Length: 148
Image (cartoon, rainbow, N blue to C red; front, side, top):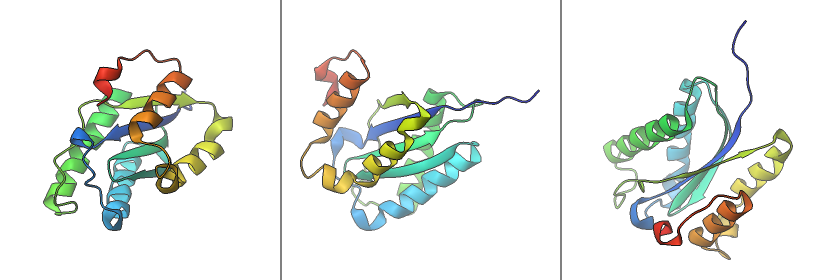
């Protein structure tokens, strides 16, 4: 028998020091690159989006991947891609940590819309406030001093 599974995740991580370096005009190039990375790892990308200081990825993670290794690989490869292609001149890397959340398949459509509307969403709410709400919604204990 083959290995089968479905694991819908929202992956969230930010630029180092939450610097606003991911300028809009080049974000799609970065997002397409990350899609290729995920595709090579047999993951199914539903949506990727973000703003100047962080990104969200809605993805079905293939069972052969661990979340920590997957995020580490995405961050390392995308950082190299950004630097070698001079994509975001002020980009200094990704923040060390990350957040991930699991969802039922029924939540997929709402998640996709949520990520699609990141630009307008963040006119009203900071990334830190958004992250705190996600952590609380999922019952994740955290120390606020580590969210800066």
